Image (cartoon, one colour):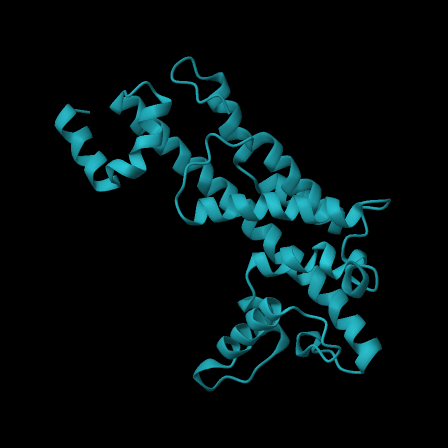
Length: 225
């Protein structure tokens, strides 16, 4: 690519966004652009993994919360918070989700409400604040593949790391400097805590290992991931 074309692309991407790639490649614009392109490729591959996992996680947690709510209050709509368990932030997230679920004259349904709740919502339901009120009564049963002391913390920490990765990808930030093999393993492990069949399905579809292996086998401009 000609120098003037490289300069044009850098301007279109923005110098600020391009700067970390220049810094990681000794200020070589051509190598920086290749790294940017590879970052986009691996981000897309991770996005597919994280999308599958997010749906699996929220459905598993929703299922256990529904059963718990039926037992405790005789109603399946756990997000109505009849026991006044949720924090103001959590209750606010639910209020927004319910409003969106019923937009344009649609009837509110649990499925629509759940679909409107972001990954961060589910992550924070796994925090220590809800250990006695939600984790022990029901949410631990959403992750039957993990047992022992500290399991809530283990699930929470895994979801925290994956949530942070997802947000970086969603905002088109660099992820090439993150521990990507480990994060891929965390995603698969988390899926396995819920359902081994689903873990195998996500793993079989994931392009992440092949992209990482191809990069590690490259003779030039290794990214070190």
